[in-house]
View (cartoon, rainbow, N blue to C red):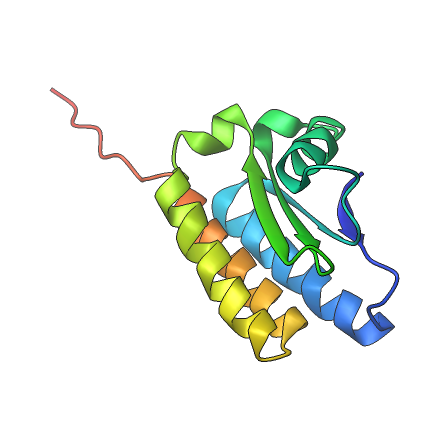
Amino acid sequence: MSGIHDHTLTGAQRAELDLAMRKAEQLCRAEFSVFIGTSDGDPHDFATSLHNSLVAPSRSILIMVDPAERAIEVVTGGHVRRSLGDHQADLAVASMAASFAEGDVVGGLRRGIQQLAEAARPENTLHSGS
């Protein structure tokens, strides 16, 4: 699983999210996947299972949205967690939830993806030559 998994989005909406994910991946060098649908059991466990099925889970960020359960889960791999902490992920979830409450699923996902990418961007380190 990678990319966008939702059968309710229009082609234009999928293209908009795909572009947002590609830009985010270029910014932070992590792979993004989005799943919108019914979670099988506990949403967090389901999102973790989806994340573990990705090609490169260590370098991936999964956003799982279950509209029926009103659940939003962000699961990150070990490599991504070096720069993206739980607090930043929680802020992105709060931002997405606010947009979803206003009926703007695509805009909320787009902004959430951007927030996560900015937070996951590795810091540039300056090396001094002696």
